[in-house]
Every structure is written in C-alpha cells, then in structure tokens.
Amino acid sequence: MRRSALLLGVITTLAIIIGGCGRRQDDVIARVDNRPITRTQLRAALEKENYGDAARRMLDSLIVRDLIREEAKKRDIEASKEELDRRVEALKDYVLAMTGKDFATWLADTGQTEDDIKAETSVKVLLAKLVLSETDKKQYFEDNKQRLMDLPHNNESVIYREIVVGSQQEAEAVRKELLAQAAEGKVSDDAFAKIAEERTLDPNGRRRGGMAGWMIKGKSVGIDAKTEEVLFKLQPGEVSEPLAVSPSAPPQEKGKEQTPPAQEPDLYRVVMVGKHMMPGPLTLDRNEDIVEEWMLSEPRYQAQLQEFLTNLRAKADIQVTDPRYRSLQDAYRQGREARDKRTAQPGAVIPGPQPGARMPAGRVNRAAPPRGR
Image (cartoon, rainbow, N blue to C red; front, side, top):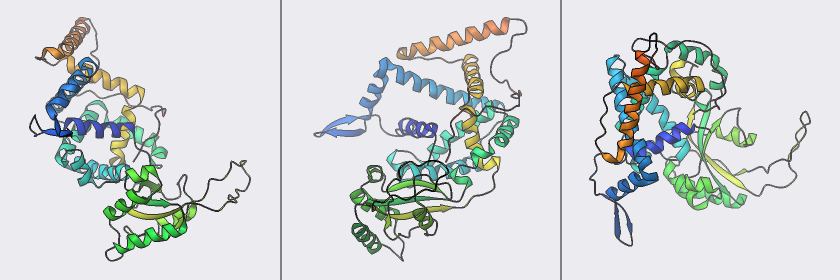
C-alpha cells in the first residue's frame, strides 16, 4: 500500500487546524502529575515555534483558503455534494488501510467531524478547478492510464489484518481465541485489533491493530502466493488457518528458476480481510482526486499553482492586525507592488489564470513518483 505524502500532510494539518474548532480556549489537553497543560498553552507554544514561523504559515494558509473560496464564488465554481461525498468515501478506505481504524474512530481521535473533512476537501476541489483546466486533466488522465491501473481501487484488492507469531502452535491458539469472540463466524475489527496489539510480533502491526494495508490481486510484493490465494477467498470477518511466513529467498539470477529456501519457516500468520473491493471502470471521475494530486506535484503545474496563489494574494486587500505576524503583511504588500509594476508595463501579463482563462493543453512529464490509494 502506498499513499502520497500529501495525504499524510492533509491528515496532520486537519488534526491541528480543525481539531480545536468549537472548543474552549482553556481546555485541558494533558496533565503532568495532575498539573494541567491547556490548549491556550499549546497555541502559544506554536506561535513561538521557529520565532513564530509555524503560526505565520498557518495564518497564511487560512487566508489563502478564504481567498480560494471567494475566487471560486466570483467565477461560479462549486464543489458539488456528489464530488465531496465520493472523495470522502475514498478517504475512508485510505484511513482504514493506513491506521487500522474505522473512519468514525479516526475522526474522534483527531477531534474532527465528517463536515470538517468535507470543508477541507471542498477547498482542494475548488483550487484544482481554479488552476487546472478540464482539457489538461483529460489529457493527463489519458497519458497516465497505466500508472492509474497500478492503484488498488482500479484492481480487485483487499484491505487486511494479520497477527504474526513464532510458531504454528501459537498461531492455532490465536485463531481459537479469535473464533471464541466471533459472532456467526465473523470476527470484528476491534476484536482482531485487540489481540493483534497484544500478540503480534510485527511492531507496525502492534501499533495499528494488526493492519497490514492493501493487497492487489496478482500484483502483490513481499507476500507469498499461498497467503494471497487465501486472502482473496476469505469473506470479510473470516479468519484464516495458520499460514507459514516464507523466509526470504536468496537473490538469484534472472531467467533461472526460483528455488524456495531450504529452512523451515519460524513465523506463522493468521489473517483476516476487512474489506474486499472489485474494480470499477477506469474513468477520470473515479480517479479525479489522484489525477489532480499528481498534476499539482509536477513542476509545470506547481509553477502555475504558485503563480495563481501569488496573484490571488496580491489583488486582495489583506490586513494583518496582529503585530506578531507583521512580516506577512509586508510580504502581501510587496506582492501587490510587484503586481502593480507588471500591470503598468505595456503588454504585461499578470501571472496566474484570470477569470474565464484556460490553461494551455498538452502532455506533461511523468517525473513525479507514483502515488495512490
């Protein structure tokens, strides 16, 4: 399973920005020997981080979000309910595969609501519509179909958990313990996660309730054929028999028949499928969020994005009233002055797409690393 650094950044940022919405400023968020640490103290510390640079970046981010929404409103650009629902549904699979938690638990752990996520997602949708033309997106989709075919949601795939132990006997005992908690032969995610946190030898699995992530049928890496076969036969909630964890084979020359390692396995796993997904049609609609993310990670579109945001700040009347963030006000003023100079020059073109403008269509490079769900 691979997911972009951008998604991880979004999750972290959301937890920081939105997590405190609607709460009292002096909420106690930690205790040290019963001495309270408050939300106000945390915010004050963030404002001083790197001499306030972290807080200035966050303030600029909030200002830019406001500008994006207003610019979209001027151009009659919207993020439809259907678009937001589709993207949030896709995010639920990412969250499960990355954290081992269902969406409701993850929201509670990060102090968010689904409405918070949709508000953040709407900004991303609006920004993509403001910066990327439909012509470019369609062309990029056609040029990158093969990359998209390597993503889990475009294949038959499973999200699964495993418990790894040191012997077949111990694996059988774990399986019996799981089945003892099963209802109608199905083990709950919570029951599996609890035992995984106590018993699995995999440190990552212990932190994530045994969550192993995504597996794509026929494209698995680092997993033996027997385990893959079992996983795609299991129904969600069913637990496998103990499966030997095959020792790594020594490197062999290409073209020669691969011989299995001679030693006996010393690890066994018990696996359970959390979700089994079948591929839908390979369309731009089903892959639009990934296409937009890939495009905006490439140099050409990154440059267009930065020009657009620079111009957006420059043409707005932004007043930063807190002296601690005066450097932001200076940066916005310098941006306006530079914009005014360009505008005053005969034939000058203000950077960034203007209302009604379209980005030039064309092929793009594939230098950006593949990312996906």
